[in-house]
Structures are given as C-alpha cells and as structure tokens.
Image (tube, rainbow, N blue to C red; front, top):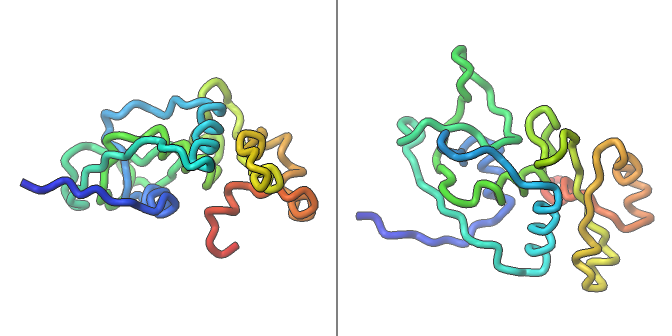
Length: 175
C-alpha cells in the first residue's frame, strides 16, 4: 500500500499543470460554482497567509486514468474526433476543485465563453492595489472589474501611476 505523500506545492505550478492538461477533474466532479466574491475572499485569505485548506490529488497513469476525466473549467485542450479532450492526465483533483478553478480564473483570465463566476455571465479580471497591500489593507488591495469596465486598469501607464497590478501579470514569469 502506498503511503500518503503530503507535499508543499508551488501554487502557480499547480495552475500550470491544470493549464497543460496534466491536472484534471474526474468527470463525476461538480461544475465550478464560486461567485466573484468567493474568489476575492480566497485571494484575500491567501495574501493574509491564512490557511485555505488542502488539496487532495490522485496520481494516475496518463495512458490509463482510473476515471473519465475533463479539464478544469477555463482550460481549453485540443479535442479528438469524438469531442473528448486530448491530454496526459497525471493527477486528478479529488478535493480543492473550486479553489484551483478560481485561482486559474484569476491568473489566466479564460474567455467568458469557457467559464464565468456564479451569478454572472461576464468575464471579470482581478487586480492588486500595491499601496493598500503595503499598508496592510489586504481586503482593500484586492478588487475585480468586469472586462468592459476594466480597460483603464489594463493600461500599463495607468497601472504604473496608480500602482495596480493585474493578477494575470503575476503568473507570467516572462513579465
């Protein structure tokens, strides 16, 4: 019998595995149901260093996963002729899907046609006010805007002047 192997994983590494189709959901998992406020609360908790729970993963043989699988909502993988996603699922999420999907949504900003938070059909982008964060006002430092109203926050000069960073920039190692 295999022992449990608890590990501290890099959060952005986990999201990258999901983006690459290596970390997937068993088909029986429910869909993404968190609201925009739930997502903001998760970000505030993470930035405050609060415990936000653990993830439970099942390592799988990529050539023979134990369950039918699907990518987390927000991840678009190529599909075969039957419409099934093509990937090499190395790990399945058994617990933590809402948190992982939320964080993927924040850092990768998938199109609204793929996923949106509960109670909305609009795409939201998440930002960080660096001055508020520096003051320790974490709750005020995190905010989100629908993509139509967020245009000024996406302007690099505006970001620099107002010390605002989109969370999508934080996940991009090249930037």
